[in-house]
Amino acid sequence: MPTTQNPASPVRDEKDRVLIFDTTLRDGEQSPGAAMTLEDKLKVAELLDEMGIDIIEAGFPISSNGDFEAVTEIAKVVKNSVVCGLARAGLKDIDRAGEAVRHAKRPRIHSFISTSPVHRKWKLQMDADQVIEAVAASVAQARKWVEDVEWSAEDATRTEIDVLRRCCEVAIKQGATTINIPDTVGYSVPEEYYELIKMLRETVPGGDKVVWSTHCHNDLGMAVANSLAGVRAGARQVECCINGLGERAGNAALEEIVMALNVRADVLPYWTGVDATKFTRASKLVSAVAAFPVQYNKAVVGRNAFAHESGIHQDGMLKNNQTYEIMTPESVGLSKSSLSMGKLSGRHAFREKLRELGYELGDNAFQDAFNRFKDLADKKKIVFDEDIEALVDQEVASQSDRIKVVGLTVIAGTGGPQKATITLDIDGVQHVREATGDGPVDAIFKAIKAIVPHEARLPLYQVMAVTEGTDAQAEVMVRLEENGRTVTGRGADTDTMVASARAYVSALNKLMLKRQRGPSAQAMVS
Ligand code: KIV
Ligand code: ZN
Image (tube, rainbow, N blue to C red):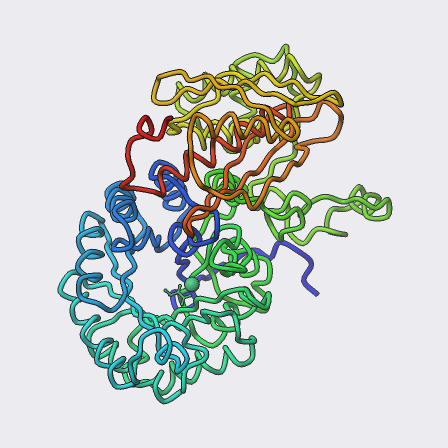
């Protein structure tokens, strides 16, 4: 039996290469609360490009001016990956996507329409023939802009085989070069998805001339298994997201797909051009900018993915790491902590630590992070890697924030009423308010709301400790919901109240961005 770390097969046949299509910035951003700013998206896109992702789906240009701008800017900076914009079947959608990707070295338009009976009836009010006509018109329009056109059958796995085949055939005839078969609602099981891809590849006229693609959602927890079944059936593009982000239960997790192919090359003899040693960094960056936590036991990138708790396991690991590890932490970019940090650590050691943790910061961001590290080291005896990650992630996520927490004083305790005085900097102008509340957090949030009035609901307020010990940093997550828009903010500090204020303000910054054409930040101030 093969043990571990199967080396990629020495002879890599092009026919076995699987293209990795990352849709973190489009489908991933559709996760409730996972909004990203333009700067965040550019950072993620640059990292995806660097790690060898074949296709980056940068957004849905017609959906908002913000998305249009993001796709345009990403198209300008990406060096190697194909940059793709999503479009519905309407001609305006296609043209908007065409305009956004036209700056890319390698542009792609991805057009889609629902094909299943339930979607045709309730969403589109179109019959199958009308859908097929729309497929033909949309692909033909996309081909006027670019040569690389992907077409997707939304809800393909619940579509009648005959209708699906006719749609695929028409799309290929009109010049689509990739045909994507989404399991939009995560309904399929691996055997069934395997048969579907195989049948389409083998029976749709022209099916041998295009790349077949998988796009599996995780509603029943089978997104990765279904995607890999699709690859075994001949699909050579997998659509997936970092950390398995995406609508509802998410998409297939990119890092799991690639590592399954790397580790189990004996039974899955396919390969990708992705540099897996960047996974830890990518996971953390996406989690930070989307303010979307990674579950502790998440495969490949979860905090516990390489942790060994029981004595028997630890004993085995000390003797030989192959006893309980099928891949090394280093193979996914997780380096064993070596340098312990404290208040005597200087700039050089801090820079080395950042490098070891996979962060590359510009001079200003480095200086800000270093100052915050020094403050933290004054409060905590030992600064753990997790502390530094929380601190830098917050720095990265808040770089473009217009509202910032400058000061906070809280009176709490049994006596009541609890009172908070907050100072916020909004576009360079300081505002101070005081409020009382039902507990200190309520008082803080009321004081912030007095400065930045809004009607958003607060469906989530969550506190976690970053490390062990009573001097641990608190990491707070705040979710706000306004008119169907959901945003999540994150804040970390050794003081739980300060972390709460930061998280709330971070969510407000995101909400302002989501309002897009809304007034300036100052105009929101009462
Ligand atoms: O899940 C889905 O069907 C999609 C399509 C737009 C590709 O995301
Ligand atoms: Zn999707």
